[in-house]
Image (cartoon, rainbow, N blue to C red; front, side, top):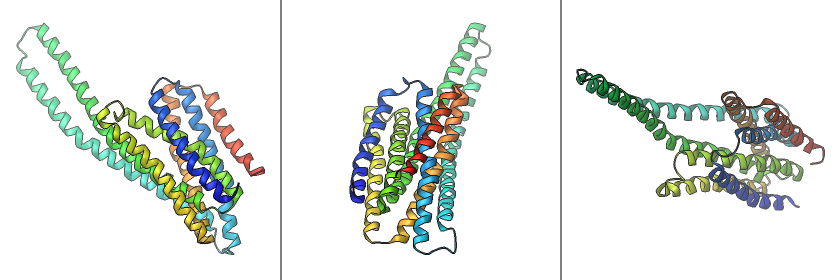
Length: 306
């Protein structure tokens, strides 16, 4: 398969895998055992780490060497600054969520305070009525708390869509800008594994936010998944145009950016998140560790014949 053939194949396969991942999120919901989901996600994390360090960083550095730009380690610097900037974006998005939660909190406290005063006014009633009011108070308080969490979920879904779309378009540009078949094969394998689990994570968040169960909001589910897929295709198209412009420097830069995005998502997004799941759910360590190591080794070994 030629370079252009791999790029066209990538557009079709990435779309299919993304749709499959989102569909599985709808079908599975909470029916799958968490250990299987976590093992699969960590397998993709291992694939991404090897793709970033073993394949793309090497390819970017090699391209800079071919351009005789040897006065600085540009590939490593670009990869590193990509990780830094993506982490800054992540921190900014988390702050937006925190501010949303903090703005909702005073309203809940006011409502609870009003219920407290009402319960005090009825303090002279018999003990049975007091007990009933206390039960009602606790129930209302729990309802208010759940309402706040649900109110924040749509925002979290929007922010997750934005963050994953940014990452997706960077992946796409990196693949489209690549003009080396072996490097493109490595990127293809890494992205195709990662894309399915990413789409599953996004779909799961959207389902949890009620964008699937509520039919009146289901269109937002399709818009979010469609955006995630569309920007990936757009990225490949942009990168493809860059490759035809014969700009070796631009291609080297975007391959370095893709390397950084792979490392960021794996080391700073997937692994810490799944570590919290493993601890919270007290999952068996052996299967998830084996899958993580297997993902890395298999992807790294791909360099031997790719």
